[in-house]
Length: 118
Image (tube, rainbow, N blue to C red):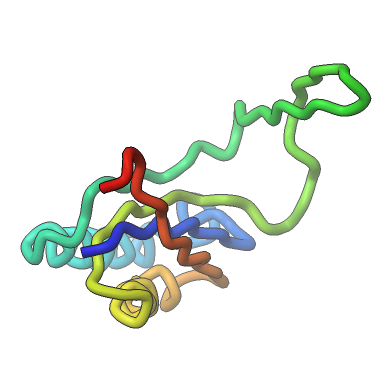
């Protein structure tokens, strides 16, 4: 099995863009999705990311700086760390995320390199 990182990017916030009823359904669908990944041993970790308080560290011309992220409509909403037999299976797992039904979303699927020659 290989490991993959899904970076979930949205153009809105599930927490503020959905009605209470829509949010409840989203939470139910998301819980079922995560439960299914856990049941099949595919999920290694996942978490939403807080919109406020994020910082970025950059180095330019020998100077290290930190500051807030640039303003953009697209935000990183969370991540999943999963296992899959190959990229095709990882893509199918990403495509089945119910967030696509609720808000405009992109999921980047990144294969992770093993550390230590494993």
